[in-house]
Image 1 (tube, one colour):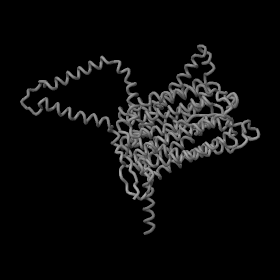
Image 2: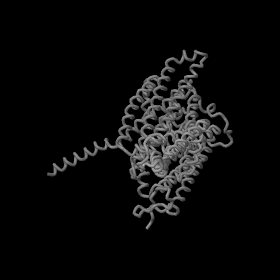
Image 3: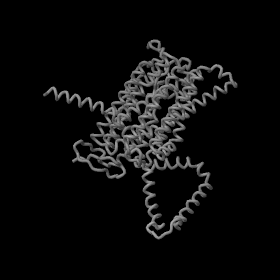
Image 4: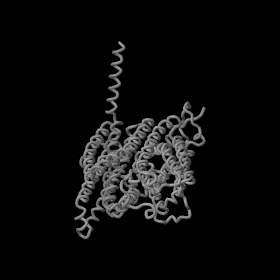
Length: 584
């Protein structure tokens, strides 16, 4: 009897395990994993390709980064508005096809340039090769814009609809998506890096193009499957509003036309309908006369998007998240380059990056646990305090032994001429920007293995150790805070504005990211890096103060009370859909 029960339990466990792979949630995770894996490979590889094409110079990479950031900054609201106005399945499929086809075309062009670079450089006095560079950057930028649209529609909209009214499920889905981001952010560039190292750039281009072709077909099928399993995805808020507005108009039209009057002769047009047709014709004529408005329509959309973003109840929370991008305290090319000047090897930096990924995963776990105990808004407050507390270690590191801080050195001295020789930058190191980990590439010299031979060996490693300890530890609070703001936007922004608001949020993130690069350009020396650390920590503090303003406005004094066994009541602010635990 016991054996029979054991077998039935085993069968039920196996059935539930197999059944999980057929759920809508798993299909979303699989689709997002495939998309993110391809994105991470491409973002890593394109930076390396551009450096190799231009003779180990970072010029093309810098231009590409500037074009990408500027495009999202200017077009984020317009992309979001297009997401709002277009049926969900069409948005997802169009973005998927445009993104992957752009990457495939770009990969083919890169292969041709690598194979025929010498003859191309001699044709038309080198202008043909320059045109190829421009074409590569343009197509790669189109792929990034399509990726932005894909991220908005899947991560900010589809997940909300699939989760339904279950906010706990929404939190779990958001956290799982972030964990997928963390894992692919490390493994995908490592995989393509090995192919490029043991093969060649041409093989790398071919592999990425082939991957995107296969992934596009599978993702297309998965999107269709998710759409079929979730009927709510077929209805958008704007369509509901239009239908509600048309119903009374049609009813009024039926009454005026006398449909209830059976004596009316067939074939006659009622006066009300004729007047309606005249109004339509007049409107069409006015539209034809106002052709200039069509040209200015994108600018109106851009203006309306930013105004709508400002009027959102979660405006200060979104601004707080954007301010976290204005920092050098992350694993980007700037911090990696500084670490190299402090004697850290490339292999050790890769270990630190692995530790940062683990800390990010712990942050997603902490988010789900704290949210269940204290509520969503308090989770952001606690995460902000934790992140800022860890970053204080970075501020302390500025004044510790081994710190190169020297205010007597001019900030405009050339960093590269004094510390880095571009001809010695041999191998790429994966780096990422904060807090969403958009993959970029930095360069360190892997030939430096012995500390005695290191030309950049500092007097002490205390300063750089505290710096990276603070950065890694802060990622737990960072990712928990990021998930909090993401879910607040998902829950509190109207469905009809979800795309445009998230588009503006992406624009704000890129704007602050650009500001942080400008700050580094103005003070590029390692001696001034300590000042950048202090400024970055100040911006993080300002971001969390903005979130605190939002949280205190929403919860008041209840923000500081958190008990797990307390009844829940709705917040005093009806716009904020968060349950607050009230102490008994």
